[in-house]
Image 1: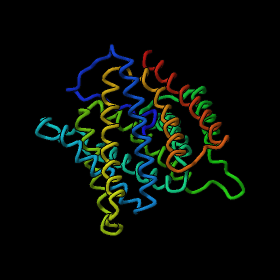
Image 2: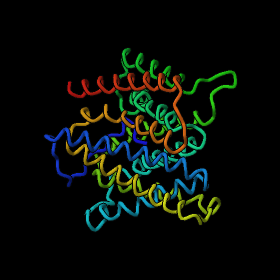
Image 3: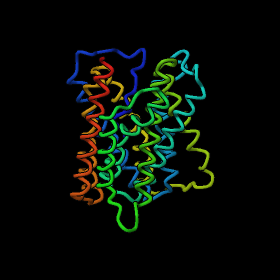
Length: 304
């Protein structure tokens, strides 16, 4: 899943086509749709093989595909980083996000997980103060509180409390926010290509560590094909996201990230027969409205 605050910097060698906003918007919509396909595939695979094997397939296949474009031979100096610990920490946050999100998808519906993940801007606003020194004003605090109220509508805690899977999904949003903030921090010192390379490399290594204890050899050709599709679509989606940001400003593209919920609802119904409840739709609307307000405020503050 790609959250609103994950705005990757464009690699230094990528063309900048800032005068093609409609192409950028189209690429953004296709990119977030591909992330919806990734989550759908992960949810389906987790019903057939161990979820850690699913995470491994997502990272290793993505890494293998990305090596075709980003490698030390085609991009000289790719491995050089001024802040290696921050690179590893950032990549670890992305890995944790994937692991938590895929685990939550075993239980929650697609529309529920994406609605909760849309809370990333709220966590970014919370963490930006201590980590980036950014001030969180009264209006932002109000937007954060309203957004979390929307999340409560999605998870609907009753007498039994909040489902543990919802807590995992919320944890994924928090780690994703840390990933987004560290991405901003690294943009000042390392190239985008280097940051992208370390993301898939560290994720592949981390995903491989538990593999000897959880490995299940897939025998169904459909499962094997889905594993390949998972990593390839995730890689293509990320590449499309980069192309979108090369053609339009981040502020122009940010609102279209919320179109992912449309794809998630459609895929949840087509693949799993899941229909979102009125509570989920209402909560998602509140979360999106609050997140969009935060994005507008951040865009204004950056222009100022």
